[in-house]
Image 1 (cartoon, rainbow, N blue to C red):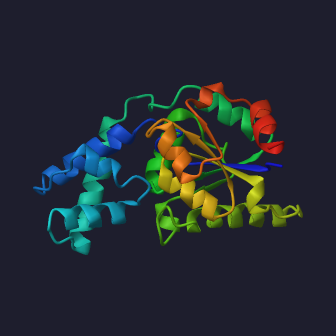
Image 2: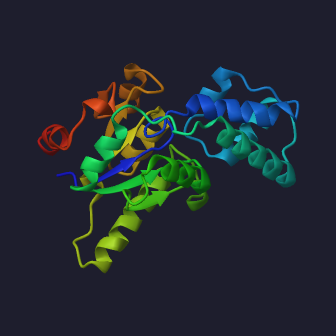
Length: 232
């Protein structure tokens, strides 16, 4: 039976993968490094450090620690400039999260930096709905490594331990992801998976091992989660 639900962030909660790409393109352009759309999407699920390291390797350029910090700061500034007054959230996701928060422990597990996640939370009135947040700064390896989801489970169980509640098992966690590396990460952590075709197609998500694939979270309710995952 599902007891906790963990969301990826970019591409699941906030519809900003195109904005993330544009922000990277702006930051990299000043360094003379080109970023094609296909190259950006080939690195879905990676954190900023991995993304920039591989991008610089592709361009046959050296990425020093100082240069990494400069480009990352420029990318973060560009991302905030590209966000509108109302962050581009996916249809139905806020209502879905609010309904789930009354029944389940919730978390966000993302390779985005914590500041970017919190910025959207504040703008979209999502503060207080998620019990745990695992961001890029909290892990040493990006998806598809399972460490990020293992960390989220550890944090949830720490809270449950403080409240004298029986610890969660991985199979009691449902992960919602939009890209194959995230699906694989969750599966390697022993968790159930719901793929949403916000970024890639159904075929790719199923090939990665998604238990269920949906075209929109707007179609989902608490009862749907129970019906599909508790009796499957």
